[in-house]
Amino acid sequence: MSLFFGLGHSGNPGETPLGLAAAGLIGLIFCLTLWRTGSLWWALGFHASWDWAQSFLFGVADSGTMVQGHLFATHPTGKVLLSGGATGPEGSALILPLIVAITGVVMLIPKEPQTSHL
Image: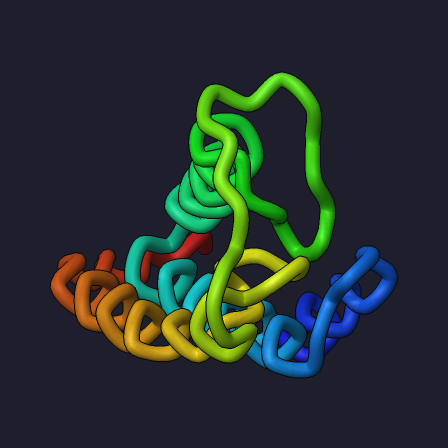
């Protein structure tokens, strides 16, 4: 499912292979949060807040898509590998340490005990 989540971003304008890989890795983290919490709410909230912050708060591209009406107007400068270029932060190499940090935070979530539905 994480592979499909990553590939589902391939239709976004300006998406890059690194951005697709990052989306797939985030999909794995979402699976981990489901396993740890027993609910999809953490993953849904994280994904919504990530997209909102990129699109409307910081005004950067989100998977290559720019929206109108953002609070700040930022412009990627420097090497695309570090800035993400037209893809946005998901297309930069800096997303990889962030993914590791998010995984660490998720591992701090206490695992929800399995309940029997019999």
